[in-house]
Image (tube, rainbow, N blue to C red; front, side, top):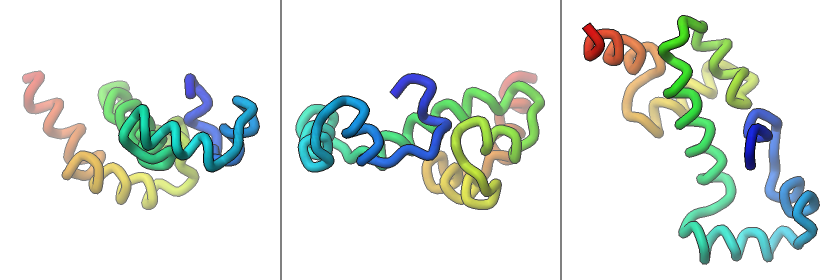
Length: 98
């Protein structure tokens, strides 16, 4: 997926880009990665988002940088994935660094 994870990607977009069908791509994700395309994309975005918390950027800027248009939607996804809000994760990192 490279850096394209910031784009509004769909499974159809990726299938076209790699020259396969939507169903075949879904099958490959399930068989090889043991996950779905959407779950994998969310994991990639959340990993990159967590890495960007230290840079002093706003949560809204981080949300945009990993492909979310709405900061609230990003914060909800971040909490679901990491168990804490982006602001709480940032505070935890600061506390652990001190």
